[in-house]
Amino acid sequence: MKRKYYISRPQYFMIIILFFFSVTCKEKYALPKTLIDKSYLVVEGYIDGGNDSTFIRLTRTVSSADTTSIKNESNATVYIEGEDGQSFYLNEINPGTYAGGPFSLNQTQQYRLNISTGNGKSYLSDYVDIKQTPAIDSISWARTADGVQIYANTHDPQNSTTYYAWNYHETWEFYSAFYSNWEYTGSPDPDSVMVRRTNGDSLYRCWQSNISTEIIVGSSAKLSEDIIYLYPLILIPEASWKLQKRYSVLVKQRALSKGAYEYLENMKKNSEQLGSIFDPQPSTSNGNVHCVDDAKEIVLGYVYSSTSVQKRIFIERSQVQDWKYRFSCEEVSIKNDLDSLADAFAGNAYIPTTEEGSGPVIARYKGAAVYCVDCRLRGVHEKPDFW
Image 1: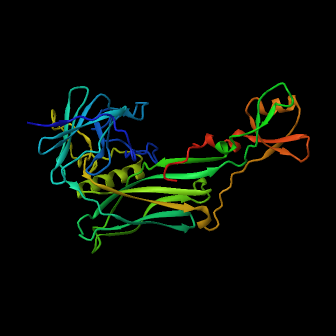
Image 2: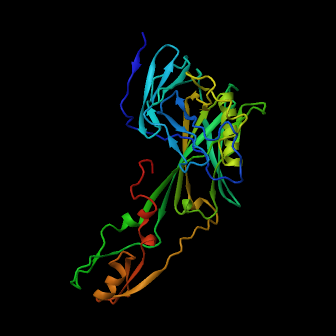
Image 3: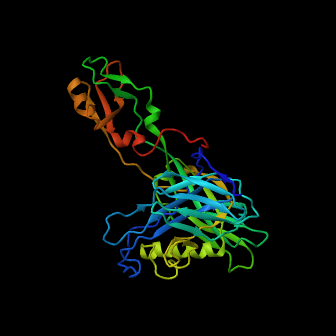
C-alpha cells in the first residue's frame, strides 16, 4: 500500500532556488519550426535530498507573437514519488511555483517527479539517485581590475562527484548620502514646524539582497582529481554600491549527475549566447521529463536530486583596496520660514537633513532629495538575522 505524506505550506524557505533564463536576445535567432506557436511544458528545479525545501517551477513556452514572456502552469498536482511507493506532495506557493519539505527521503532510494496538469495530462521524470554533495572547502575572493571576483573551492576525496552546481544569496549594507536630523511636520506654528527626528537611523542605514538567477555549473571531469579551485561565481563590478560598507554572500553547492550537468550546461550556453532556451539540439531532446499520455510530446526540463551544502563569507569595504564607489548627492539651503519650508519639504521633494550655522536661533536648514536621504527607497532597514 502506498503511503502519502501531505504537508502544509513550508514555514521556512532558506533560499528560493529557481532557474530563470534570459529574455534579452543578443542577436536574431529563428526558432525551430517544431517549437513555433507550440505550448510545451517547462519543468525547472530539483529534488532536495537533504535538509532544504524542494522548489519546482512549471511554465509553458509561448509563441514568438505572444506578448507574455512567462506563462505559469498553475493548478497542477506535483509530488515526489519514491521507488518504494512513498509520495511527498508540493504545494503551489506562487503561480507556477510548487514547494514542500524538507522531506525525509531515503538516501538509498531513487525518486522521480510526478506532475498532473490542470488540463488532465500526466508527466513523469526518470527515477534519479540522490547525489551526495561534498563540503565547500572555501569561498575566496580577490581584487581585480574589474571589481571583486568571488570564487568557489571544493573537492571530493572519493573522486565521485565530478559535476557541480552553485547558486547564491547576496546581501549588502549601505547608507544614505545624508543623515536626517530634522523632520518637517507641516504645522502652522513656526515653533513646531520642524522637530528633531527620532528615527534618523531608519532612513540612513539599510540592507539589500539579491538571489542568483544565472546557471552556474562546473566540472572536474578533465582533471586527474576531483578538485574545483578558484571557480568564478560572482563578480562585484568596480565601484558597485554592494561594497559601500559591508557585503555578504551565502553560497550553496549541489552535486550533479552527468546528465543534469550536460543539460544545464547546454541551457546556460543557449541563454548566454542566443538569449533563448529554444536550442533545437541537444537541449530540447536531452531532458528526462516525459509526457505519459503522449510519448512524442516535447517536455523541457531535467529533474535531478542531491543534498546541498552552503558557506557564507563577509567582505568589508576596508578590506578592498581603492574601492571607488560614490553616491553623488547635493544639499540645498532652505530659509527658516513657513513658506520656504513648505515649498521645500511639504511635497516630499526634499527631506531636511541638518540645520545650517550655529546659535540659539536657526536661520536656515539643509535638505536633500528623498533618494539621497531615505535608504528605504533602495532597500530595507531591518537588519538580517545573520548580520
